Amino acid sequence: MIVLLLAMLTVFSAPIDITIDTDTISLGALIPFPASDARAAISLGYAPKPGLARRITRSEILNKLSAAGKPVDDIQLPESILVHRLAAGLDHDRVMKAILDEFVKRFPGGDINITNIQVPPIQIGTGPVEISASLPARFDPSTPVFVRVDLRGSSFAKTVFVRTSVNIETDQPVLKNKVAAHSEIQPDDIEWKKTPLRSVTSKTAADSVDGMVLKRDLESGQILTNELLYTPISVRKGETVTVRAVAGSVTVAATMRAKAGGKVGDTIPVEHLTGQGTTMARIVGPRTLEVSK
Image (cartoon, rainbow, N blue to C red; front, top):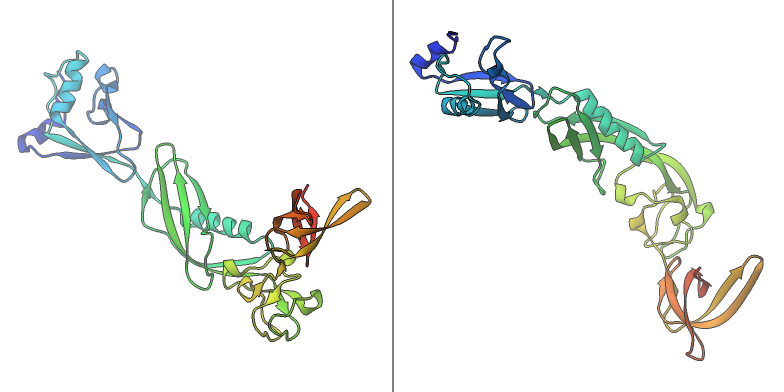
């Protein structure tokens, strides 16, 4: 008969702690059965998630043995066993790389310098872990950015937010000359320079500057952002407009009436001057549209 080392703990009715690193708990992980004892393979179900614990009672173990038709007379157990799941902390360098990769993806060609990240002290599994990061849609790089980091292992998935301090320099449109309010920006008015990015929502694409108008007077050296620009109304509802239809090298134009107003790039309904026949056309300039394809 096997007298197990756990017997002495029964005298004091004291629980014991055991740490495992598996997704399920076998009886052999709690009781030192000989290798030939089939009772070691009996499953006690799920293991706790990394960093957590599960308490298994003596009656639960005895019931499992009885249900399997195995003897229990040679086993003495404490009132309960606390089973911990082995865990590890987040790898700081891997988290840093995942966040940097996401910044580089968002700002290709930019100079990215992460000055600090604060990785939360969480516990994860000890096996392979996939780490991915995603940036908020809008943020100000001059203040800490809370980057979402997703962690996925074989038996767990977690999401944490990492406080990140970052400096970003990207090519941005900068005024070369002083421009008055409500003046249209011309290509000669701007030059593209690598400058610190102050707000992601302020980044202006190269093709969105042409034809846009300033909201106020600006001096040379000013970085052009969406907050400083607006697109003027090119077509007003009820106006007579020119609508072109292009087929290869042939262009046909007709005079029609706009049934709605809009800016360059908008698609609006237009009608013949007789009031009959309506089609959709895209605004390409002041009172000029092209038939949508």
